[in-house]
Image (tube, rainbow over all chains, first blue to last red; front, side):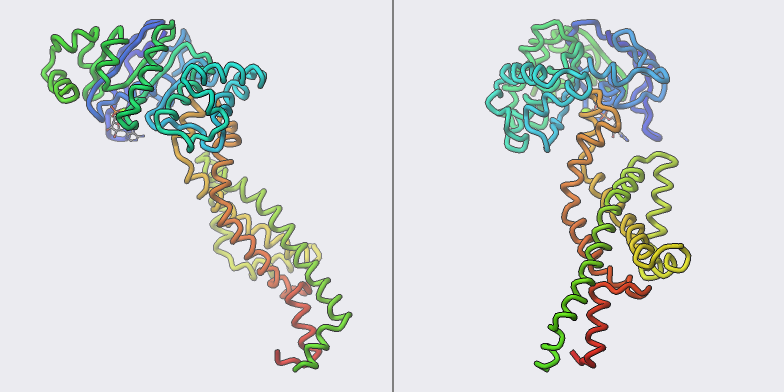
Length: 241
Length: 183
Ligand SMILES: Nc1ncnc2c1ncn2[C@@H]1O[C@H](COP(=O)(O)OP(=O)(O)O)[C@@H](O)[C@H]1O
Ligand SMILES: [Mg+2]
């Protein structure tokens, strides 16, 4: 479903991803953990080519998106991303946020996009905010709208980059609950998060990144019970406290 | 003093001034409309970072911004086969477009990078992102500086007087001259 083959990413002198190989199976729920600056965002952003790897190959749904002239906008329609800072379109209403891309990118008729958009807003508990503007919503509500916006593209893959890190603590759970609900479906999820409770409940596999490499991977229990590397233990002891 | 003021208010003087006002409005209206279009284009080009388009825009903007407007008006008057009022309007348009271009670029730069990422991740093309997401947000932030610049345009129409076009200020000066005024 998603395949990274020998991926390297440099930012000037910085070698941010080092020979990364990773395969995410269709329907898999993958959680990515690791200290700040270890390359988690860069890794996940290579999966929809928001960052272009310096070398290596990224294959999404059978398409080599690193090849010259790859149908990027086409592939991105089925790979949705949810950001730490939500990145809703502030000049558009909640419903417009959810329907713009389906209408303009996928060419879905407005009525249809609005009907499904309202369904997804309902699912994240925000149908009644359809005509509000993002600035009128709390952080947790904005992130739930961002998830509805992602869902209304009917993606096969969803990428989450620390979706709860910018939220006040009391709003974290409402977003995690929506994500847990999503995980019941066949959708492929890659989630960068330090919410180990979420990882334990949802993840098929957890990878620990350090210094631009995948240092350790396994099912969530592995990380709670028997992390192999000292760095992993140290990191977990800090986030689990 | 009162007599002089009364003389100024005579019908033919008022009409004379009204013609000046019309010319001022025409020059500034055309300048504002065309410099807005051209300036937006220049601002987007420079912001795009495109190796060629961005450079063309940068050279244009820096050259015109560095030239005194009055010099441009004189230069255009004597090098272009146009009526003075038109060569003046053209000079003002090209000059103002450079300034509008920088205002537009500033507005675009002030839009959060996350907007690009969200839009591109949803499959929007570069142009769609610019048109539907980034430019509308930038335009809102550009309203105050643009308003200021366009007020300056109205005032600067008086420069066109130096090439023989009698707009509002020019006609006023003529009337005052006729009445030997010390106003
Ligand atoms: N656009 C960029 N330009 C330069 N350096 C960057 C850029 N994006 C990320 N980096 C650097 O790459 C490293 C990895 O960043 P990132 O992938 O964001 O890590 P993480 O998400 O794990 O915190 C960091 O040192 C960061 O400063
Ligand atoms: Mg990050």
